[in-house]
Image (cartoon, rainbow over all chains, first blue to last red; front, top):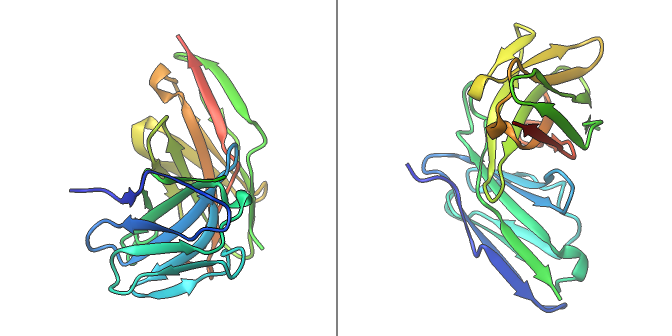
Length: 116
Length: 114
């Protein structure tokens, strides 16, 4: 079946602008995760959802970052007043959410965000 | 707080030789440990995980990892490396009470030469 997809694959924006990054998880996966990966670093946890609710958003760096998952499937990561330091690859992953493989994550290809 | 250390930025190995990628962790309580691999221009792929039980975990593509509680380590191993194993490898950990919140290491680049 289809894997996790993310759109756009690349996003270039200007400092101060608003951006939205979209994630389509694997069908039936109740858990969804957002990470940020800078060059030469591992993925940095931002937030994860169980169903429609954000179960842990402790990784969001500040109140410019917000994520939603209104119907428990597609998720959108929203960044307001972008800064150059927000430039990174934003990764989305999903997992079944329960059972022995509940937290085995399947990653999307990422969205490369560049803030000029 | 939970943390992961991958002490080697890069590991070089000749094809056919054994491969080891090191990982140490810090977490409160029992750890849940994972290895993921990232090939160029592709998303991270799950290799294996340790929850409880046998200290030696077998995963995809002939990889295995050994959990050592006293050394807080979870090293990834493969008895005979292939050129196609060249990729970026990430170790990740979460605590028992931190379902969904993972800490990833910085990654280790594996280069397998023919």
